[in-house]
Length: 181
Figure (tube, rainbow, N blue to C red):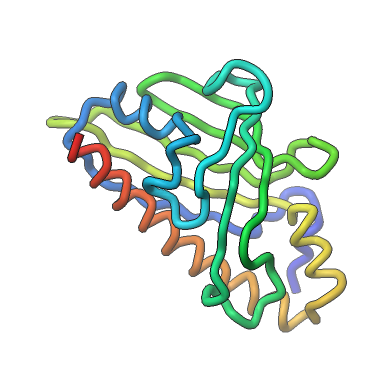
């Protein structure tokens, strides 16, 4: 069975892309405005910048999140509202906006989200990507306290499918937001 706590492991890796009839700079201006993310995200309801210059490398965003009871209903994950903090690690206007989720001590975890933008004829190709290497602080607690080996494997399989659907929904919502102007 997989050891999701070891270095070099990939727990989740999902991405979705879509064409948007909008120039890359406009796409970037929107996706890097994390405070607006409730307009397109499945779980993030927005939030505030708490450190640094918003949207620049090193800045920290506190996200307000909400999850219903439905996704992978049997799994012992956070339901309802919670907050996370994330640090911007790459910010190249018109190209890429990437951030990592921080743990409770404000250390970077291997939980990385990004929007990648490529100029194409008539607009942009927008890719939303999420990768989790080693388990986050919260998932490590769940894995060690509440799931046996079979439960861990089932969780990874089902949560990966949930994440894939979420990033797909996010790019489709962004397409709508961007193209309606």
